[in-house]
Image 1 (tube, rainbow, N blue to C red):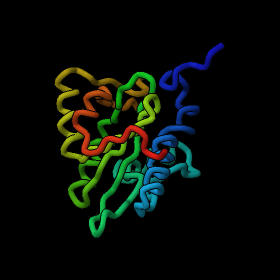
Image 2: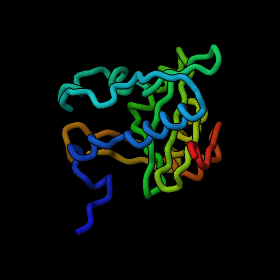
Image 3: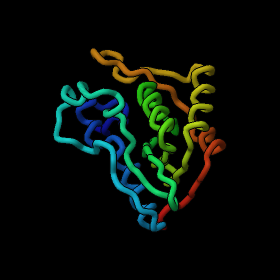
Image 4: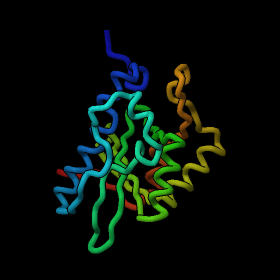
Length: 173
């Protein structure tokens, strides 16, 4: 029997892989380019979901990396999308990334597992496509049958590509 699509697997199974491919792609690309960076996010902390839920959203959704482009610092959140070609962002995470951007420029690095390509958006562009998504009704709820459902919006990959600051077909050949 085939394994269910990622989104249909139990959260306990998904948590072990969420973000890993996107973060690995980011690291490989930056190392290939020679761009210095450090990890700043929680990565895979040795804490339970119940423990992590006690953190403020600002800490729980801290961007994954800090990098410098010359003398200009920026945070980078790495996130992927899969077979459905929809980028899904939790509303709470979106709000936190916008707040980080108020102090230090923050970018979204998106890894497309299907096309093996990447793109980057600044928070202004992310906010623009998020508004479009909400107006179009492209919204949903992660884990709706749990005690902690999470609202999200989604944007089709094609639309993200149109909005991207940087797009790379083969990021680290």
